[in-house]
Length: 148
Image (cartoon, rainbow, N blue to C red; front, side, top):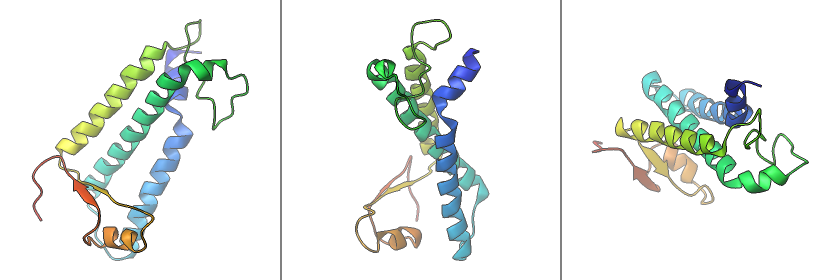
């Protein structure tokens, strides 16, 4: 298997599809509720979500490598991708670590474009509605000065 295919398996694309599906579902709900969508910001947001997912995948692969390499009963959801190792046809564990830092750099660049992140509790009733309608909820994290 080529290194490119191994790296693709390391990225776990099926999990990325789920993140994108949820993100676009959220955009669809906003549109349904009558809010205009700035597609440039929406695309930047999807890049942020995917980059954060990728960094999580890569760091998980790197730090779980010792236990994942001993797992002989890997499933699509558990046991890692199985592509890290020191043998032929495997990627070195350091590849996952470097890839994680690259993905986190993309997250930092999105933050530098002032893409805000709202952190709030999903457990408290009414918080999702407050977040959607820009109510006072949670903590707003931004990459720069916020005007509003």
